[in-house]
Length: 137
Ligand SMILES: [Cu+2]
Image (cartoon, rainbow, N blue to C red; front, top):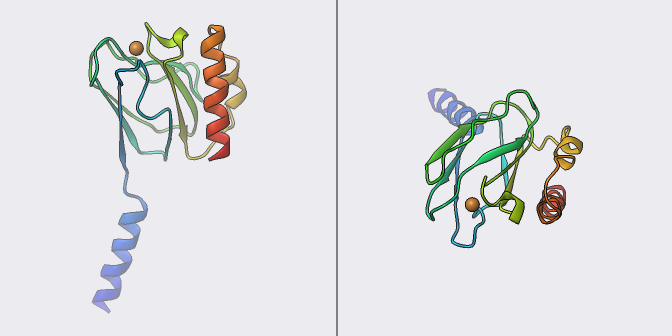
């Protein structure tokens, strides 16, 4: 009996275990993971492996309360508690296409708004590409 309870507890804790994903700033002015899939309760950490980059949120499920931006060359960590699609970029390079997408809980309800964020021609084409990847995975 005791072993079954232990097993059940193990399964429950494994199912709800929050994870942390690490994304690096690459030497090619990009993020090492362009499209990240996480669940509510997970954390993303951005590692300043290369200089001159940061994280600036451009869209999310709650446009009035976007996650915090980071300073250039700083480690950044965000805990995600709202399902939906998040778009972010590097402040000095986002119009060159240094952008990333995060999908929380496989929830695409705010995709239209993400797609409507006004950016440069190059950045918009990158957003289109990232959305295509996100929807096909
Ligand atoms: Cu950058």
